[in-house]
Image 1: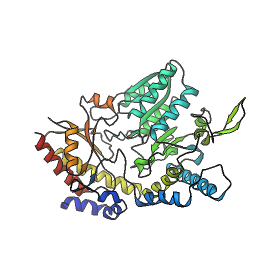
Image 2: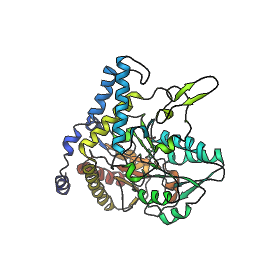
Image 3: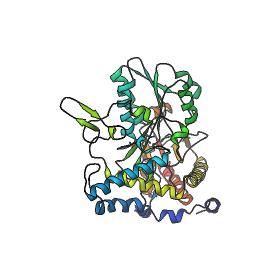
Image 4: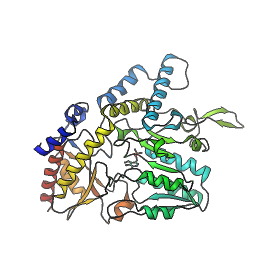
Length: 416
Ligand code: PLP
């Protein structure tokens, strides 16, 4: 590790070496090199408390929830609902505003379907932005197609910031919902969501935020934001795959029809008529992912144990350090240079294809993501085939950035 890097970590008293010991996978060897895992925006690694809790669930708790009177069923139900409360507290929501889903994608689809059924009709408009992940584009397109509504897109600047003036001009009496990402997975831009929400609410328009890339890095307070819907995925926040969260204000949730029918979501079923449960169970048809729901709380407790402020400060240092190092490499062009960014660095290298860089980095043990990152319209805006994306988590180090930069220089010299 170089001297600057060392002093940076010491300044902010972030004990990354101790933290890394909680993540066994970080000690993997790849092609004879120690793994440098910079693909955290795709999925994050899991600490031992999460790994062990999965095993513990099947050894000591496994049973179906909400249905049984026996010991294990009560235990599973208590842990499942306890976890919901921990998620709720983490977002400053109340527990009946927290719906378990499979992930951000399902959370957005749920709103697009159920909110859409209740509130969107022919001629209405949904506003999204140019920097959305496909999962915050396609469900709205499907809704628009079903209802004869149309999609309006907030344009962005070359730096990768939303054009807020243009956004405000798009808001009208036809707008039924604004759905934007809190943090861009490709650019790292942290959007000014307070201003976005305020402008929409001034016209009584609800706002959904895609928090998939925000929750792993930032403290989220849904009450303070006054956001109407907020979504995130367990696997990006150091928890298991197959679990996600939809936060929704009760006033909306109880006006929305169910997303799927089945067990759990009903009050009473006869062949003539079914009455539905209140939120959140109304939106949780069938046996949920019990294990992952319970373990998600362990992941949230884990990051709260480190502290989101400390995490944000440290990751910002990593971002600055990585950005400075990459800017020194001839031919590297950063994609996404917003003033407020999370720890994502996307770039292209003159005369090379992102996939070739990705393959050559992997040969040297460095895991990055290359391609369009499920944001094809966005990479189209930059007229590039895709980017190389290095995304950092709090267990990454300045030393790893040095290894990455060295490996990148080698890849570039091989390709030229
Ligand atoms: N939104 C953003 C900004 C993302 O980065 C991702 C995943 O990369 C998603 C949504 C979809 O998340 P998931 O695949 O966990 O549902």
